[in-house]
Length: 340
Ligand code: PMP
Image (cartoon, rainbow, N blue to C red):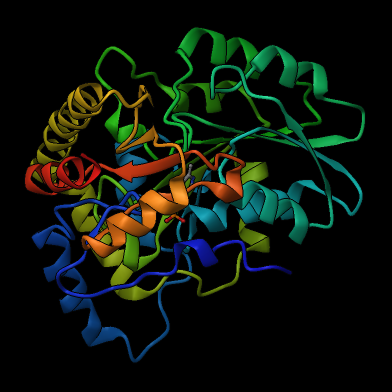
């Protein structure tokens, strides 16, 4: 299979400003760094396959029992597991145009068939997605907010959609960026999981929790679906330091609050800068903004030459657009200066 991620290859160097992968510009929280370092002492042994400490912490936080949780090597693995437990070869998956690229990959790994529903204003067209669900559809992916477009679906229409999906169809609600939502946007999808046996909510420690390199995420679903997810899961898929780092990050409310404030201010800073430059962008509910620059490959190359890496969106069919992850104030300033 073609390497669909080769457009993300990192040209890492100390001086580069890396705004290509929606990571946390604050890096790893110090609390998690210390916990991971301490956990290295035990890394000669296999990790706790059940992720007991982290599941207990998440269970308390989300008010579910640990039997509702699946841990993954990033939430990417939760998306893959959802495809593996829901799909037989040849069956159908529904997701939106401009959906996260792993949906296509997970579909291919399951030898299934995708129906990609045209987007509406860069976001999900939920009515069209509902209409696209056929008898052989077994899985629907919905991202809220969506990557790479940053679009957001309000709670009421999203819940109405979830309730309208037939019971034989699993829905993977991908909430990788949920911690960045404003208080007004927030909704309780765990309560929806309690009501809907076919719903999996996927979340990650890669973004707001600052642990992208540790590879850890989780899924929340009712016990029968969760036990199928865990049966499919590679036994030692989440490392000991990653589990320890996640427990620490989950409890680090100060870091999460700082992340949220930084992101909100940075998003405003970039949006105002794009306005000044006369560049169109899609209002974003995540930690990134999609901006229309014309010949994106050329602009991307110029930014790289200036020491700034952002993301090309050619693989998404958006050759005029770049996705800029929101950085520290001085990094955002550097992007705007380079674009000017
Ligand atoms: N879902 C969405 C929408 C994403 O943007 C990402 C990361 N880019 C992921 C899931 C997966 O992230 P991870 O595997 O690091 O948890």
